[in-house]
Length: 425
Ligand SMILES: Cc1ncc(COP(=O)(O)O)c(C=O)c1O
Image (cartoon, rainbow, N blue to C red; front, side, top):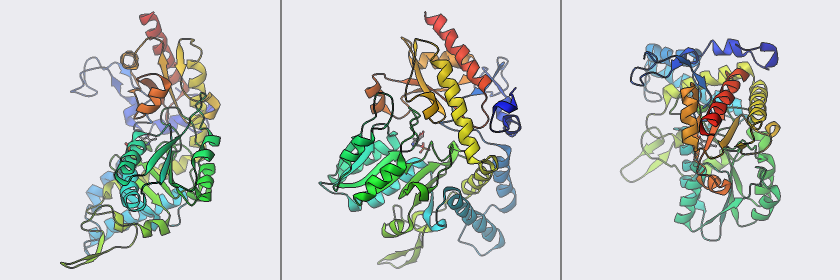
């Protein structure tokens, strides 16, 4: 299907690792893949929501359940020791992947949302108060926006938003105005899941640190798609989700600088996170276990390790180059239609996604027509309602790309959009 010389990565070889990409869609949804109307090849362009899972990651889960399934840290029996070693190694692998100092800085959570909530509750409730500000951007995902908004309400702090200009770029001069000595936290999305805008996180970190504030980077869309090194961007916190980077659902990562995590109280209490307990009081385990109460995400951690190995084999620079190539191609092709509006910065300045609207057609109607062509995209507000309000639309249609996507799939998307144009003309 693909012309290898036109891609920075071997897309054909990658596609062979994803059996789901061979399936057809369109039939009875209660018998997936078997209905008589399952005739259209799947074109999966919903990667910003969730990516597909390669055999190597599924194999790591099967190996775990067939070979050494056991609870961690609680048993001295052989299986428990094997599972514990693998689970701890997964923390080390994540630390290496994002340039953290070590496993102490890597907390496994359920997803990006939980990572944000952990910091908002464990740090924000204790540290924020009237007169303090939390500075966000206008393009935050609800996972960040709603969480900080609600913590601000509980603590009396206020939330301020760095402007996104008409071209979809973050207004760094406005950031410099907003971030001041009242600022305690700057929480910014790294790559916007709606605009594709790449925030200048290192510059924002400098601004935050000049005023003794922390910076939280929402890496849900950046860590899967480009090299991210917490040292280089000087992030105090970074969050991302396994299911957006070839891993399973049910695992997220919270990175935090060790001295900050050390200074924070636990977010959840229970087993696994304690060192000693009496009827009167308790003391906490070392990092990162202090923040991982109860039986943790063992299978998911092991599978995330396998997903990172897979991505590193491709090379994150190459993943980024592929994403940018597809995003620019999609941007150029969709902007050929004068009744299609694409949101965000120009094609050569964005992460691997394109959100757009067809004049006079609701995003849900458009996505239903795309579905009739086998094209899986997302329609809605993508958990950025205030940003859509600012754009003056209730919803948009978003195509997002990953390592197994090809230009021919974007051509199929564009043909389907063209069909919709004829239909609604
Ligand atoms: C930028 C961004 N932040 C946060 C999230 C939330 O991720 P999760 O649902 O895995 O917690 C998403 C998911 O779409 C996202 O795109």
